Amino acid sequence: MPELPDVEVFRHRLDATSLSKVIRKVTVTCGRLLDGVSERALRARLRGQRLIRSRREGKYLLAAVSGGGWLVLHFGMSGDLLAIHGHDVSYRCFRLEFANGAGLVYRSRRKLGHISWAEDADEFIRCHQLGPDALALTEMQFRKLLEGRRGQIKSALMDQSLMAGIGNIYSDEILFQAGVQPKRDVKDLNGRAVKKLFHTMRSVLKSAIRHEANPERLPNSFLLPHRERGASCPRCGVRLKTAKTAGRTSYFCPQDQK
DNA sequence: AGAAATGTTCGGCA
DNA sequence: GTGCCGAACATTTC
Image (cartoon, rainbow, N blue to C red; front, side, top):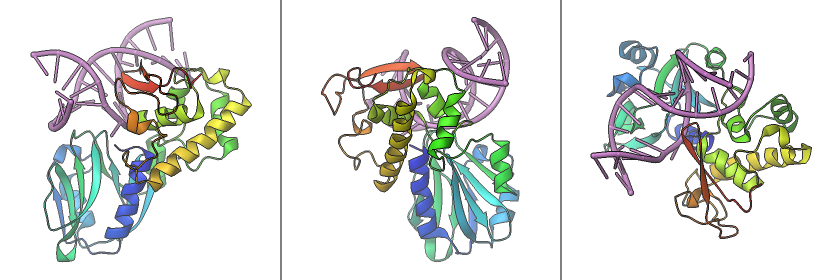
């Protein structure tokens, strides 16, 4: 689930439900998700404090805490963030409890995410070798990033140190809508193709955020709702193909993507 | 039963 | 140094 659009939706959810409320209780049910911070230290930094603002960098969600420092959430392959009111949910890993039974719950089905603490958000991002956020890039920067790059375009889009936020699903979507095969070599894309790729990247990410990163709400013309074995291209009806890149599966249309 | 699944990191190789 | 691959991480789902 959690690539840039999903994490942006989580961020909106956090903003809408959890800012400015005093944190009364902190519950950690899955300690192995904690990265570089002990449960006790995390609790001490959060309890009695408030989340005052949020920030997203690539697939990371950071929340500034009133007493200083940042709560950092990364969702791995199967995490999400829910605003709850009293009722319980499964796969719960981490919960902030506010007054009146309201709470913010981090879940991670496969438990591959991370919960950490940063004294300084910018420093945290530097340490994790994160490139500029995909939606913060200008066309000029995007072109510059690809200029010196060898290898496949899909790898470049997914390289978090080059640009942050795009994963397996949305790189497929962007390449589908831009009409470019995932294995296409970066150096074979001309100026026009790079320009198109940039604008497609932005429109795909923004559209996904508008539709709450929910595949069922995305336009049928998107690849995402059809992303399964044996499915057909929503544009031309041809059977979609798959290819493996570093253990990940790419879906693409052999007719529309060159 | 076995494979695959939206992420990151690390070691090895060209 | 760069890019690519597979493995590992942990768990659920088909």
